[in-house]
Length: 401
Ligand SMILES: Cc1cc2nc3c(=O)[nH]c(=O)nc-3n(C[C@H](O)[C@H](O)[C@H](O)COP(=O)(O)OP(=O)(O)OC[C@H]3O[C@@H](n4cnc5c(N)ncnc54)[C@H](O)[C@@H]3O)c2cc1C
Image 1 (cartoon, protein in one colour):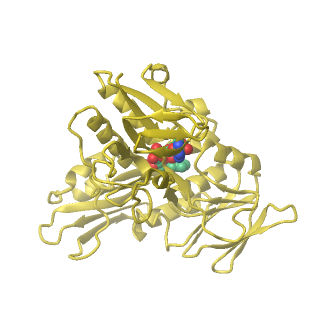
Image 2 (image 1 turned 90 degrees about the vertical axis):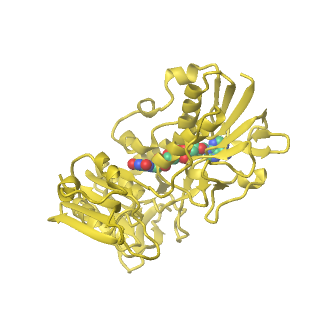
Image 3 (image 1 turned 180 degrees about the vertical axis):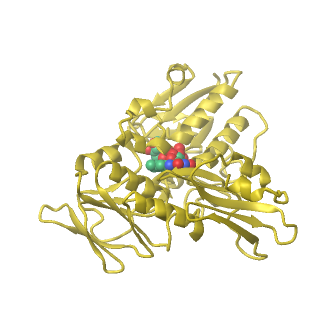
C-alpha cells in the first residue's frame, strides 16, 4: 500500500466506489481512508422506507464484514471533512485531523431542499433522507392523524406511502400538474394517480404549500396551499428535491456547476488531476444526477481509472430509471427528454388506465429513441436493447406484456 486514497462521504456511491476499488486493486497499491459524516456505515438509501416497516439498520447496511475487516480500508465514522489544501494534498476533518492524500474522491451526496415557506422550521416539519429523519417521523406519527408531503416526485411518494403505513393519512402537494413530472408524461402519471387514490393518498397537483401554521404548543397544526385550501395536518415532510452537497468546493477552490455540484468531466475528473467527484454531488459536464444507477457508473469509472484500467466515460444521454412506487412499476429507457427540433414521433399504448407506455421515434429514421412505461408487472430489461433500432412488429406486446 504505497498510495493513500481519501474518500469524503460513505453513502451509497462512496461505498460502491471503495468496494469496487478494493476488487480492482489486485496489486494492493491503495490504502483507502473513508471519512464519513454519518455515524453509521453506508446503507441502502433506496430501501430506507423499509426501515419504517421493521427492517433494522443492520439489515440495510451495505458494508459487509469483509469490507470492514479489510486492512486496506480505514472507515472513520462521524468524521466529516471540513476543509482541504490541494497545494499540499491534505484534507482536514472537523476534529482537526490532517490526512495526506495521493487521490481524493468527493462523494458527499445531496441534502434535501426545503422551500422557503413560512413555518418550515416548526417542530414536526421533517425531511426524508436518513435513519434519523425516519426515527423522528416515527416518533411523531399519530395513527388517525393527517400529514402533508411537499413534493410529488419519487421521494414524496415514498414518504407518503410510508406515512400511510404508519396510519397517517397523507396529503401530497405537487406544483406540477401531475406526479413525478421529471420522469413521467401525463398519461403515465395517470396510472400512478389512480393507484394513489386507491391507497388513500390525497393529491393536490398544480399548487404548492404557501404556509405552515403552528398550534398553541408551537408544533405544526395546519398548512395552507397556494390555491387557498387549508389542511389540518400535524406533520409536514418536505420532499421537494435535493441540492448537491458541494460545500467543499470553496475550501478546495474547485469549480461548481451552474446549478451546484462539483464540476467534473465525463470521467468525473475535476480540474485537479488528483481530485474526482462521484454520485449526487458531481455535476458531470455541468449536470447532477439524483439516482443511484448513474452514481454507480461514475464510481466504477473512477475505480477503473485509479487502477490503471480502461474507464467508461459517463453517458448522460441515457437516463434510464426503473422504480416501483405505490406498487406500480415506473420505467424510462433511452432518451425521454428531447429539447429542440426536430420533435420525435410519439407512439402511445394504453390499456385502460392501469397500464401505459409511450415510445419516442426519430422522425427521419424511425428508430427508437426511448420510452416511458407505467404498468404493474413485467421486466423492463429487454426494452433498452430497442434503442437505436426500428421498432419491432410486436412492440405493443413488448411494452405491455
Ligand atoms: C427514501 C429514498 C428513496 C430513494 N429511492 C431511490 C430509487 O428507488 N432509485 C434510485 O435510483 N434512487 C433512489 N434514491 C436516491 C439514492 O438514494 C441516491 O441517488 C443515492 O443515495 C446517492 O448516493 P450518494 O453516495 O451520492 O449520496 P448519499 O447516499 O447521500 O451519501 C453521501 C454521504 O456523504 C456524507 N457527507 C456529506 N458531506 C460530507 C463531508 N464533508 N465529509 C464526509 N461525509 C460527508 C453524507 O452524510 C452522506 O452519508 C432514493 C433516496 C431516498 C432518500
